[in-house]
Length: 580
Figure 1: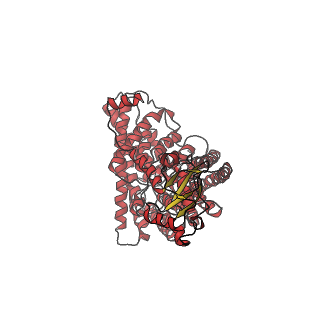
Figure 2 (figure 1 turned 45 degrees about the vertical axis):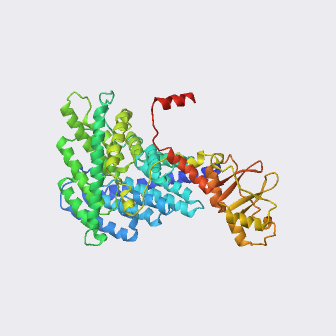
Figure 3 (figure 1 turned 90 degrees about the horizontal axis):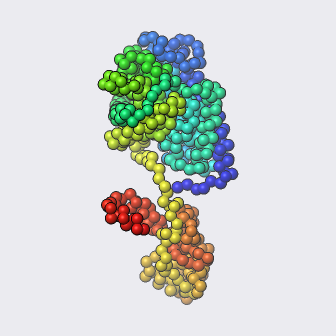
C-alpha cells in the first residue's frame, strides 16, 4: 500500500532521479575503466584503460598469484565494509525490506573498488552487480541527506541502481524492469516516472561515452514459423534445469565455505586459488567475459571449445562467488547460458540438419532463459537480451523459452540466486504483484449498517452499563436526527470516570473521526492507524449510516482470499451467468 504523490512531489523526485542518472553514468564509466586498468596491469603487465580480451591471456602461475593478491585486498576492504561480499543485490534487497532503504556511505566507495580489484585480478564476474549496488548506494545516500520519506528513499535507491545498469549496458528498459522486479516491490506512478527519468539520462550518458550500438552484435537469424517453436520449448526446459544446477551448485559451494575451520577473512583467498587454477586451464573463463559471449553468439568457437568454456566458467564462478568475494552474476550467467544454448542448438542441428537455425540463435535465447530462471526476473531477462542484441526477431522464441525455464526452475527450487541468502537470514521475499483490494473496495461494501448507538442525552451510568453488557468497545452518540455528535469508547470512561448522573457528552469524544461510504477501505485503514482508533462512524450528509471497524477491513482481505478458491464449473454455471 502506498500514498498518493502530488505532481509537485513527483517533479521533485524526477529531478533527483535525473541527477542520479548522471551520477550513475559517471560511476559506470569510472568502474569499467578502473576494471580495464587493473586487468591490464595485473594480468597483461601493460598500461591501458580498455577492457582486454582474455583470448590472448597466456596460462602462467601469475594468474593464481594475481588472483590471490586481489582476494587479499578484497578481504581487507570487507573488514571495513562487510556489505561488499557477494554480488550485492541481496544486500540491497535487504536494505529496502528491513532497513528503510538505508545503505552505508562506505558501500558507495567500497563496493566498486572491491569489485574492480576482484575482476581486475581475474575474478570471473561482470560489472553489473557492483554498479547496481553502487548506484543504489548513491540513491540511498541522497535519500538520507534530503528530507524524504522511507518510501521515497526506496525509489531513489532504485533509481540509482537502474541508472548504474543502464549506463553500463545501454539497456534503459531492462534497467527499469529489473528495479521493479528485484528492488522496488511496487509498481506505481510515483516510482515508475523517476525510474524512467534516471534510466533514460544514464542511457544517454552511455551513448555519449560508449556509443549507441548494441553491446553484443549477432548475425541475422530466422526464428519464424510454428514448426521452430517446439525446439525452443525444449531449450526452455533444458535452461530451467540448468538454472537449478547453477543455483543449487552455488548454494552448496557457499555452504562448504561456511563450514571451513578458518576465518571468513581467508575465504576469498582460498576461492582465488580455486578459480585461479581453473584459469590456468581455461584463461577465457576469467574476467568479465564480454568478448567470449560475443564469440559464442556469432558461432566463432568450436563445439568442444564452447563446452569447455561453459564448464570452466561455471566452476570458476561457483568457487569465486561462493567464497564471498566481490563481483556480479549477470555476465557469467549470460556466458554459461549462451554456451549451453549453443550446445543445445548444435545438438538440434545434428538431429535435424535442415532445421535452418544456427547455434548462435539458440545461444541468444539460452542466455535469457538461464538468467531469468536463475534470478526469477524473467521479464527483465526478456527485455534485457532484446536490448543487448537489438534483435527483434528473437522476441517470440525468447519469451516462450524464458517462461518455460522459469516454470521448471520454480517447480524445482524455492529460492533463487537473489533470495537464498536472505532466506537463510529468515527474510522471505515475495515477488508477486496484485491489485490492492483495499484500494478497490468502498467502505459502503464492508461497513456494518446496523449500528448500536447511544442517545446524545444518555447519562454516564447508562453508557457504563451499555459498555459492560454490549458487544462493542465503542458507541457513536446520535441526536434525534441521527447526526453523530460524538463517540464513546471504553477508554474514555477510564480516563474520565464521571458520576453516573453526568451527561455522557461530558466524557465522550466530541471530535469524531469518520469516513464516508464513498471512501475506500484503504482510506479507512489509514485513518484508523493515524488516529489510533478501532471504530470509524460512516457519515453521509452528517448522518450516521454505518460503522467501519478493523474487523471489516480484515473481511475485505478475506474476500480477496476467497477469490483464489476454485469454483465448480460446468454448462449450468455458464448458463446461469448468461441469464444475469
